[in-house]
Length: 296
Image 1 (spheres, rainbow, N blue to C red):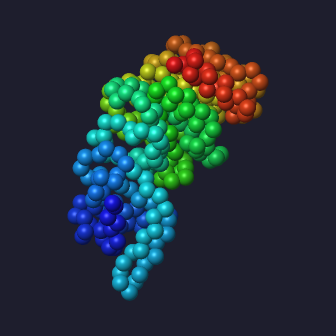
Image 2: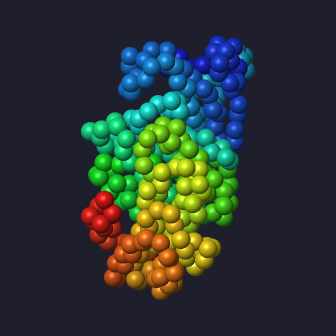
Image 3: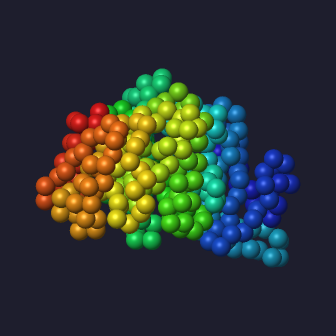
């Protein structure tokens, strides 16, 4: 059972809880789990739950907030050592505010050291979100191979706070997600993947993650936006790299992708799908097969 705090200042009821603070679209309220028996995940102790509220009515005559909850997004404690089975929504603290994320965990995966894949979505101002079909394809492919997977929205996308930052601040978002994964699964290896704009973010942040000592073991770039962002300095990677693109890409010139990949001096695999465009319409099964069969 969740004990919903209805006072204007819920810290009076729960001394450890923050006061209610209005934002532009919602009020964020920290509530606490009073009965863990009905909670669907094996947690010990009390953990905060971040609640997004889409409608608030204030009863001035009694000074009570009447709260109607739209969706509960779980903010997991950093001390948790595993993702919940299946698919779960959560919020990760980012440098520009909360980052909306989804974790996926195979149902029967071993709880010992394994792999976590983090997938970065395409351009934030052009409809790119963590629900993009290419991002979904990568996530499903890695899940089916036994990976835990994290998809997330960059700053300013849907319910993630902040504003678009031309791929610079988005690198900080990715590093914040990596920090969360490392706190949650400290012994797991990391795979980074990005599609289009997300490939620039993943490629740029990869070296910084390795400098922090994070075990990034693979980097997958799908339809990398080499003509739109500064890829010229990204010609050597300290982990195995895979590049996947279509030779009829209508957004990024495929010859430029090939030219850039030829300049990479470190270990790499390059896959070109004949006849495929930037979004791999009708070719996602082939994309999934390559990820599962060639990059396992």
